[in-house]
Image (cartoon, rainbow, N blue to C red):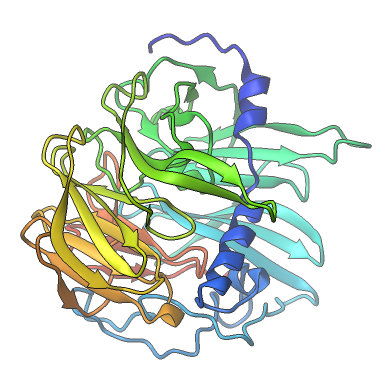
Length: 427
């Protein structure tokens, strides 16, 4: 394992940890402003804990082209304004859930909080049979801690936590790991490394919020390393829908500024790639005011690391930039369509088809397009999973999250045919 020194942990952790609740609130506020699903954070985060689990959408189950034949929940959930938490068997008991995570296409995990009023225990739910049965385990953390979880392997999980007020109770943060699907946990001390060790999984995307460093975990032991070299971008986000071996890709901005109202905005949309595990980075800044939405500068999509797409909007027009040499040079493809102010997501199927989705929730009235000629033309298709398809490293197959609008997850062995994994019935 290269260049581990276990130094600077406190500094790295302080710089890295940004509780995901604030990020969820920020995204919700922005989506409201762009006429997306008008629901509160509570409605997004709470699940029904009695008869059914998940946000009640008011939409009937549907079968979609490219999905399994069994009727599944609507592809893009859109909770109604009346969606609320349902009490559990005991008065005042509710379950707050996070995103579902893949260990492989059989093993899935769900972070959740078992709450009595404002008093919450930290929990993880686990399934080894694609959601048919679930078990749930507590984490060895004080009540009301904050934590996020990533799956580093089939049964290997890592969790980053923070608790304390900073006054009466000192703030403490750190890492836990489990190698048995969440049943037992141990404290781990992350090291630093010049690059991601071979075979380790980059988990930034699954943690659900931005770390300054590249964070990687050992799929066997759950050990964690932080790679301190950065992409050089402002407001960066690591791409999740990039297979192992295609490099580490990030999108962000060349620079940032603060508006008169105190809002941080990016300028000069850009992408960056590291082909050596985060040791060195190359970046490219695009001309014009490009964005894939207020929560990401551009969406990067590739299946092999050579043919790469940077997809976004110029005003209301969807635009596709393509690189045939792994991001060293780019040109704008001819295909363009009007998508309004919808946020944009893109992925590349194993057969090379580019899939683009404009609009992230049903309230956006999403549009979907495919291209088989490297973005030169875009053909409209019915919305279905596939435009935010994340490969599952070391396991094969793909998943697409529905968080923060719901806690279920779409899974696929081939990136074309999808089935829905429902969240568990929680007490």
